[in-house]
Image 1 (tube, one colour):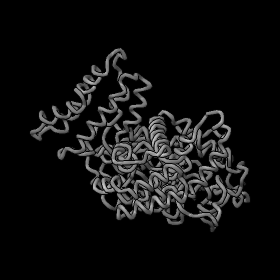
Image 2 (cartoon, rainbow, N blue to C red):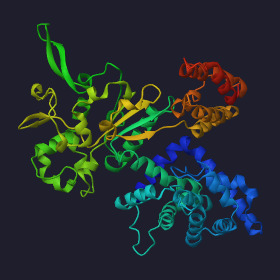
Image 3 (cartoon, one colour):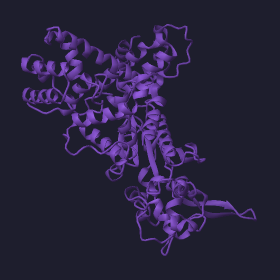
Image 4 (tube, helix red, strand yellow):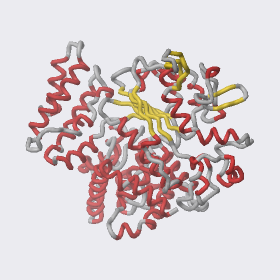
Length: 547
């Protein structure tokens, strides 16, 4: 499995550095600050209230360059109590000097005693800043998910039962294994310990979240945050990982596995699933004929393995049958789409894992009348595969050409288990309330905020003198979020500043003014139209942006 680990690293790190190098640089920089503090403590100069700026970044800030604090919150009152408490600072000094399991536990105990509450994510984040023997995946629940996945996949050995099951010990175990696997790359400086630590989080984010945990997700947020672009990138990554593992020599491509459509107000069930459409017969006369919609056609394409398996009439579960168990039925599965599966060397693998993933992306998913478009698919979204098959509104009109699953009760429809349904939506265009609770709970909701770190990296590569625009955008979005008339849904996405076609000879002051005039001010004017505060707020926002 060593090669699989390195393939995952190449996909998640090497091919993604344009997205993560800003994080990598911030990580290195803050760990460098911790190193300077360690030297001071060694020289006898302890931590004090004079180190408030450093301590604030280490303990308090939402994102300190290493990891986000997530839902964990440290109140300003508790923060002030911490940095004034000698016992707390002494425990922190001990951990910074010698970050091991004992000093970590002691620090966590003192945190709980002084803060009167447990903040494990924040405590773990301190550990990630003080030692590269733990990863940046500071949420123990998320870490345990990817840790178990790596073991279950056989990528890392089983965790010794006599070892402590805590977050710190498991991280030590995992990071040691990864560093041993990448020892040559570390020596040649093709990678470093920061990237290997970040690798664990990217494994979680891309392999367990969102695709392996939920096959229906909605990416939502302000306009211009790259939701559709991100969906395409993530599906491409997941497809590449699948192909490398199961079908490296096949002719499958990401483009052959993906369909992207955009919803609009007149989009209907007939467009999406099936409906009667006029077709000219041989005499040139229009006849109403049942035609499959775009989603049903895609499901037919993605579900052909499950349909063939159903036709065998076996009393076995599609999700549990192995390649070895299907070998006896090879002659009854003659389609060329089965050939690569029977060539996989490890026949103990599940057939359901070996079939390729298919991705259906719906842009502007909230712009259609969703209950009308999805119809009886509500059931199929919750119960995937043949077991969740239903009779559609036009089931009785289906033929061998249009039907999906022929049964004794007529043709039925199902959503294949290898199909990922991804919706994107701008929350300012139409309320998320268009999703009723029944539909909402069938999707995983993933907010995509403006990414100023990505913008900063892009500007540094494109025209370094324009890099301060990333800070300007961050400051502007902070003010927009605070404004009661707007809020976080109305933030300005980083994409508005990603592809600037101005001459690179322009100064950052000139570009800032042009971006404001061409993109940002007109957008804010639309958001504030009719509020009576357009001029006042736009002037205020302009000052914050720096124009």
